[in-house]
Length: 244
Length: 244
Image 1: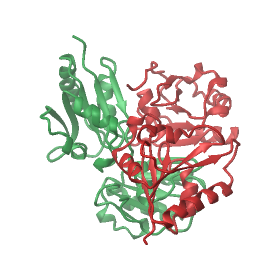
Image 2: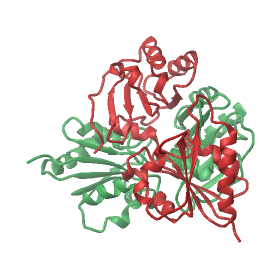
Image 3: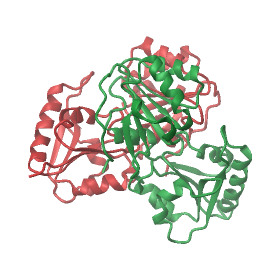
Image 4: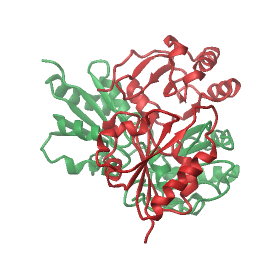
């Protein structure tokens, strides 16, 4: 019997309407549905498509412990073994990924375990990057501009060095803010970039918020928040509401 | 009468199945459909959704001359005037954008002309960036890695300086290759980055091609081609077919 196929399905930033037709078709055709989840509680990725999981497909939750640093390799290995068992029986497996599967996602860990042995198809999704730009109605980059995507998890000096290297006219997105927000704010202030910085959280969800970064309370910042930086543009754009 | 609303609809990289549910709904509800097009010939953006333009919606093609450099401001002003006339009559306008509207797209020019006077909603789309990574089955960036998106239209020295600044473990995507490919290849060779570089053209389309960059004939490279660079990773991944 031929092995099943593994699909890495990008589901977009959170609004179920930002799912693609292809991800929806492959999700509904899969024998088994897999998704990342916290140690206890609901999976964000599953929540995006919950309304379409009405056919009783078996589900596998890959539970990641809440801790800093990369997830333990043992979690990926155990999940890969469960997925491989389905593929070996000839069943297709849909692995649900918020945003895009290969843009800072946990899917890369699953992929690394299984890509040599099974057919894997990646379906790209709307990334948080463009979802945040859309929420802020702020062009990320145009023409010859360079875009840098920088995780706020870097050390303060590394973060400062990277942001200082962003030229006027270019753009930067600082991702994974959460508890790193206060550090980012200090760096932006030191570099003279605070006034033009835009803050976006929960892009595309009902709880979406867009604000000048300087006005944001560091204690309130979730992990899924992003800063959009455009050196040389001093005008703060007005707040904009949800992208309807 | 209330003005209509302008929608910037991201339609993804080319596969009609990579259109989102939201873009499809708003496209079909619009009074008028607008899209960029070459001086003569078909619009790529329109082609993505042509099968859903079966209701006789009036269409406006914004035709850009084939020339290097930014398009003349007069083209955006004239298009904005046509769009404004529809909005003033209360009609909603869907502006079709390949990829994502705010990621190196021509929509920013339309947006700049109309955002002060009309309600504008941006619907993010699957960008060429994540579509190319999916086609190559190559994680763009993971964990604390930094991603640089660099247009190949930069001068050779600027391109070399930017690529030399990409640290091992980080990633870069060089976009808009076309006639700039030979220049990029020279730079990559000089920096010792050629062997690990992956080339992707026409991601998500039937003509999709993924290959080691070193094997690509510069004369064959279209504008919609991208190079994925991961310094420090010397292994060339095998070619992979279309993402099915």
